[in-house]
Length: 249
Image 1 (cartoon, rainbow, N blue to C red):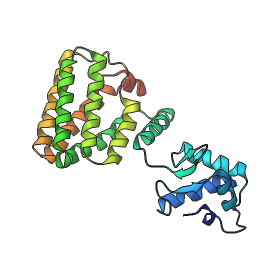
Image 2 (image 1 turned 120 degrees about the vertical axis):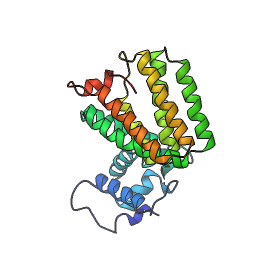
Image 3 (image 1 turned 60 degrees about the vertical axis):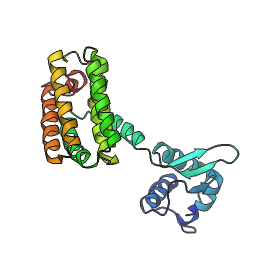
């Protein structure tokens, strides 16, 4: 698709800036599949000329689109602007920042996490590959070795939950879980005791066994109970701070 079709000849937006309108038009073209990953839009000058906007307006639009992850801009010989290839991790990090800045409570985060993780676990039981199952077992072994190292064990737990979500083969669920965990996963975990850690390991082993047995319903039920336990341990009357410093799953 050429950028010149974004604006009809002589047309100007009724509201907002030319830059904002160009952003909206290119984004809409991506959603409508008129623009696809890798499509070349030309140079900044090309885009300005075809859209009949100033170079400054085109530059502002491209900066916004690049920040949104919609376009990739390469400078120098052979450079120009292309529609970007998707990067769910970039989306997850950006959403996490917005959730944190908005002051979303621990209870809200964990309610959403419960919905995501239970479905992801169910789908993992249906779709996990042999290599993904092997990866889950390696994470269990690593967590067992690190049980007395609280930061390492905490990281191993996070990696395990993400690995289950990735085994669902649903990239939306995996990206959403990553974004929530950026906000909800504790950077410190002083409340984690060896007894709690052993319980966590036992639940994780059961989850792997159920995924391997392809028992989707039972996997979903166990993950639901597990995340409800996490929610109960992390939410306190102090709200968001419980998420930052409460016991990890």
